[in-house]
Image (cartoon, rainbow, N blue to C red; front, side, top):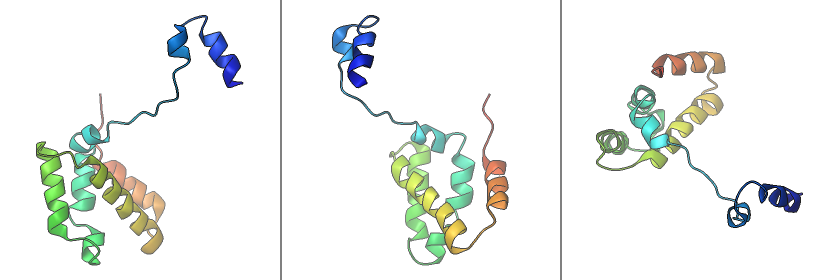
Length: 113
């Protein structure tokens, strides 16, 4: 099937382009965490439950947020993982009500035009 797709593609795009290997693509999480998701990051990680349990130090999390927000460093990957871990903790450890969690999360996110 892949062979056939490439052959058809060669009719419309250059052969060397049609034969390129697959490539992944990223998503602009760093921009999101500085922009429309910044309030969510501050709400969820500004008083991290993972820090309260002693898994992480709140001061380190605060430094990551500050450096990322001001553009000193790109901590998007770390902050994204921490954010996901916070949600996981709420759902699976604290048995938070998912609809309530959704509602409070959506309330933090700033709308885009």
